[in-house]
Amino acid sequence: MPTDEEIVQTAAEAAEGVILGHYKQSELTDFDVTVTFEEGVLDVDVYVNAPDDDETDADEVADDAARAAGEAVDELFAAEGE
Image 1 (cartoon, helix red, strand yellow):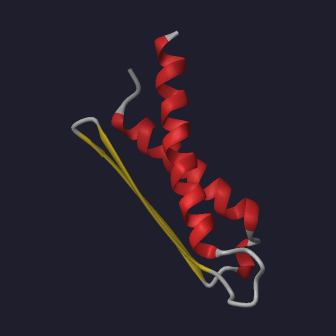
Image 2 (cartoon, rainbow, N blue to C red; image 1 turned 60 degrees about the vertical axis):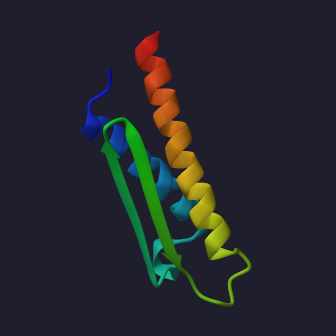
Image 3 (cartoon, rainbow, N blue to C red; image 1 turned 45 degrees about the vertical axis):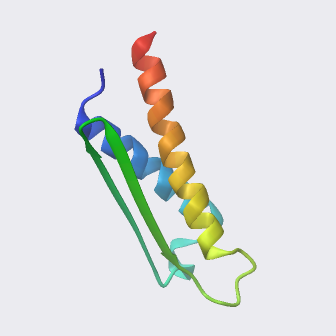
């Protein structure tokens, strides 16, 4: 069973990877990924503030990043179960 720290780190890295896959870090005004894992519940909050003139929808990227975080944790648990 992965530790809470491993779960949080895995989720945060996955979310940041999605964000930085869509934007160069220098293009972002700000972004924040907050992950908690308490009592078996994963909570991921993603905020992306990108330039308005960008073709990529920042809200969509944030949603994709949160989903990727959850999927990464699911994969972590699956790998531990093998």
